[in-house]
Image 1 (spheres, rainbow, N blue to C red):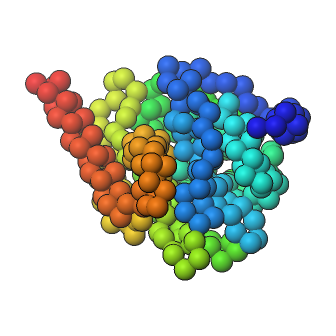
Image 2 (spheres, helix red, strand yellow):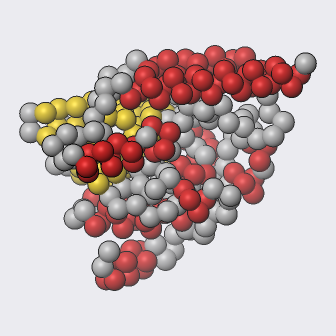
Length: 293
């Protein structure tokens, strides 16, 4: 990364809140990662532990997820190192409204001027800059869950889609991990080789201490429905909100070892990712039941 590019981004972000959030996992999540092409005009531009994807179209860019507040400069630098400009971003999309995926959105919006698209539940939290009171992780408190509020957030409903430059992006509501969870799909082409890409929301039953999924049967059913929905998506290439949960960098290493084969292309990836979420939920419910005995 050139010194001049870093200086330019630093000046642009001078009035944006990128104050780091300090958590036990944050340093690892925010480790720098060089951007790389996924397929066609879709690129990974996130950090080592928090996914962010850029999709280039003839009419502008779409950027999915913002990581932590301190991730925003890294994401923006990755975008610009590919030869794009942040002011070319037309839409910012969000997987869900937790600080590790939404924390950088306000700063990225300041750089781009683009609106953020989310579900109604997610939009309310993004505007407030904190999780909802009924979020399984709300018990961590405002200090742990807070992040810079986002100004321009526009609401989409389940299965709503929009098209930019010939590429159609569809929101698939995937609540459970968070009330406003969203999974995004689109098609990306390399010449005539067009593939279904999925940016999958988190499907893990994670909560603050004291929360019991067993006491919230509607949430359990919502999470199970989200898991089933992701499993059934047309899916040639998967990027999960936390890349490690879908083995993204293992696949990248395999592709680099054998450039003739794009190991990132894996039609079974969504089903395997969903199976992991179902197994996590099963173990969580069994653990809660055991604790109650």
